[in-house]
Length: 460
Image 1 (cartoon, helix red, strand yellow):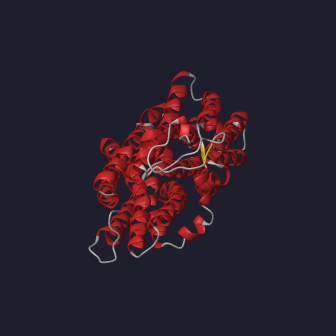
Image 2: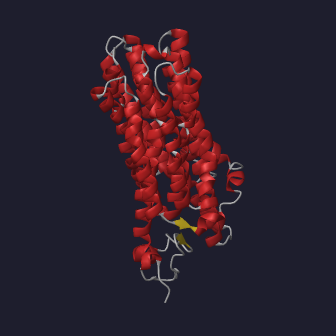
Image 3: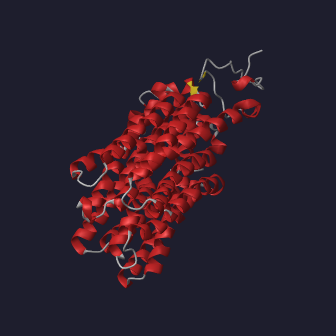
């Protein structure tokens, strides 16, 4: 009798051979007997260490949202220059998400997680080596760009975990994976606050010294406890195929609105407070006390967005979420014109919360779209197994594409703030742009997924 993963005997119709080293040759999460006989424990173990690596990746990606708070007069960088420093790693990270998505298929989920986690040492050590008064702005831009490697981890991690879980649990699993990673934004900001409060703003490299051993632990954990799935190697040409699908561009548009907002605001919030409310945030530590709160709440609620989408449908949750984001953006705009700090903070915290909720519901929509299309193909006579594999292949590819384009939304957020403050000395133009974009997003969600139509996909 063959043995299942981790030595658990196979149950039901699926015979699972023993692992070959860290490779699993057969993986059938939709088979409930397979899942109960050991599949769930293997998936959970990989999820835990995937979250750990992705969490550190987000922290490294977000380093410059913290480090700019340490760049006082001795660095000779104005507010516009600081917004550019936070935009560069966002841009690099968004671009890297595309190759990172397919690195899992090429090298294996465990192998790529080990490598990508260890790679985080490069920007961390480089930044620690050069970050001191007198460093040129060009050098800062280069090392900030290298920190973008942390942004790629999300795409490979989500693609990998998507392959481990059955459809009925994908919303929760992807929500936990992404939410645990997203908390890395808040975590690095908390570390920055701790360093500012203890060592002072003259010691930004302490932040980097804290993360170096954590990166080593994340890479070691992935090496010791994660697995590779041979079934993931069927993703060849998936990006080409998925880019021909119209739903790819719809979901990318929506994910710019949710994740682009989350990561863009996460990078920019501390600077916005210091520029727009100078009297209230005259020192970096005063801004740092609030900077972490929005990303933390947005990260914590992301799994709830996936859970809620599992129960009532991702499209419905996403639609009402964009309505709430539009209302929140309007609240921020009113607060800005009235110079009301309390209202401004309430509106921005709401934006973080709803962007996190929308991240979870939007990502749940991706496998649901291809599951619905797969069901339609089966009804038309297609082979159910082949249709299911094709749905998973394309869903994994879209997770990477939408993640990359959504992350680019973070660049647009920072550039919108930069241009608004440069041109109008206030963020109001940026808030109007955000409000308009959320309006487009809830209109598109309704027209494509919720409007009564014979062509509409069901179950999304």
